[in-house]
Length: 96
Image (cartoon, rainbow, N blue to C red; front, top):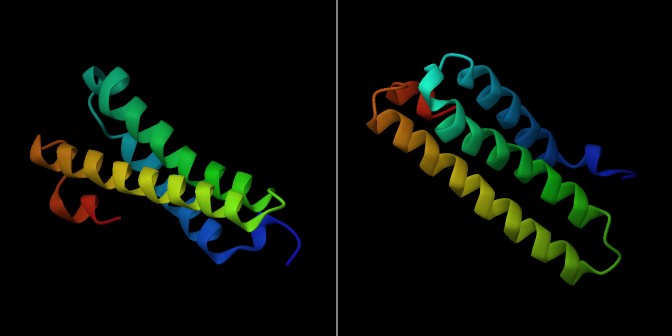
């Protein structure tokens, strides 16, 4: 394995980020600085933390960034639940 791009977890989270980005295009304009911004930032932070952790030389540093990525993943889920609760998306879209 050479780079973080080879990590299966990074690939799956990249796909999630892409799907979230596509979903956000359908959100109402009034959510631009609310849920849209929060979801974009959180979904980008997942892959960014995995990449940064992979670049660290000590496994404990890597674990710290993987934990951060897991936190951002849960933040994305919470924002999608919020969007579902506010009838911006349906239940199927929440499960991307």
